[in-house]
Length: 640
Image 1 (tube, helix red, strand yellow):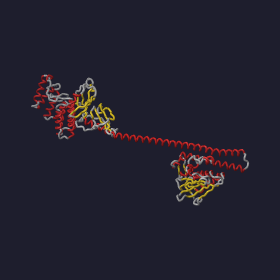
Image 2 (spheres, helix red, strand yellow):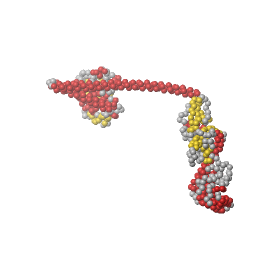
Image 3 (cartoon, one colour):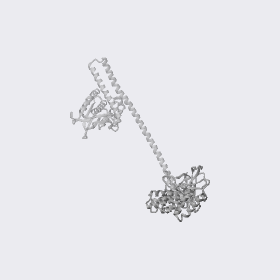
Image 4 (cartoon, one colour):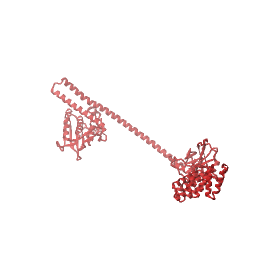
């Protein structure tokens, strides 16, 4: 039963795996170090009370002669003449008698006032006795009787409508508390009588009284249970005790938990023990609930058995080899109980061995996967390292190539400029050729610097293109004319082949003219470098096969490009073949810039070539594009 006396269901009060096991009667009845029951429940009800009514008259020697006569007179006439008895008690009270005569006389006076219909006056008199510690001659607590009579009188007045029901409610709660705290032989009778007084008032009024009846039942059960436990207590009690006993043919676990009683009225501190009682059924269900909700579950081939103080308290009773044993304390709502043992039994050996084989298999598979992953990581890291070495080599070659490309023309220009400055060249034709050579080298340097700047912008993702309507035929002719001096120097014939579909002045397309011209210049420059003397380089312009694109092409009759190099020649820093790296100029970034320009315009570039027969680079650009193209439009602008 709970503290209110209702039967507690198994598992009630459970709040999760970490919740403590609650007591069957967790209301803190206490015993002293000698094992005597001191109080019952949190309300500290008396441990015992007289079970048989006895009458003990008050000591008459405490009254003087006149007061004793008035006391005897009042007691003799109150039963036959209420008014005379009322006046007799008033005369007796006027003599200022000592306790317990004074409190009992006031109580009798209140009863006579109520009997003569003066309930309001009776309630006033009862109010004077709220805090009295006295008892009647039959040993009943006077404070309980006062509250009992107050409830009776207020119930009568409430039915008449002369008092508010709030006063009755307060009186009911006051009585229901006091009747338990000052228990007596009359307690159950008083509770039943109050239930009768409140008939017709509704359940809300009688609920506190019924709750007190349940508490009284629990208190009585506790007193009765203590009588069976008393012989089992190991006295004197110096520390916590826990032991099993039988009550109503049912096992109960009794736990005595020490606490320090505060000193009162100069008395020294006293160590007492709260008594908590647990039923085996409740402990068993609660522990099974803890096991079922525990975050760590036992393997399916095993079952746990739980023992508390040597008694099994789990519903399972497995048989088999004990795999593991754990000893601990059981946490309750008040303290921990030593002697909790959990034994894990092997109930299915075949399943254990099957699980072991399965674990061995997966463990081996995990090792194999880890080894494969490590090998894959090693290969990937090795390839990345080799790739980085290759990139570093290409960058070194790029720096060397750029240095050579810058150093040679600068040295030539400086040498010719110094000769002209000194006047070493006298012939006008010779001086004119010097000026042409200097201008040509300056154009070559300017083109190289422009390529380097564009390459840097592309690497940083800052290259942007401004589109406008451009006459593509005029652009091709102008670029060809621009590269004629370079072709003449290399003894290469440079010409154009423009489709008739591009009439003069009517071939406008929306592109970045400067960028497209730069791409053509790079392609023409490569074609001239790789063409033998007296060879032809042709720059073409035509329309696509009905797909709305413009095709720009540069064709040479040089040594050609192997098919496996078609993609690599567009990579940054890459130059075709070791021999070509020695015999031709360049830094290895021209074609990568061309590819970036073309793809930024939404087009594509490809090469058609046969070794020994020459090469043809083809640019395909859509006819219309937005007004502003940024290098960030590409998926990976830094690739080139």
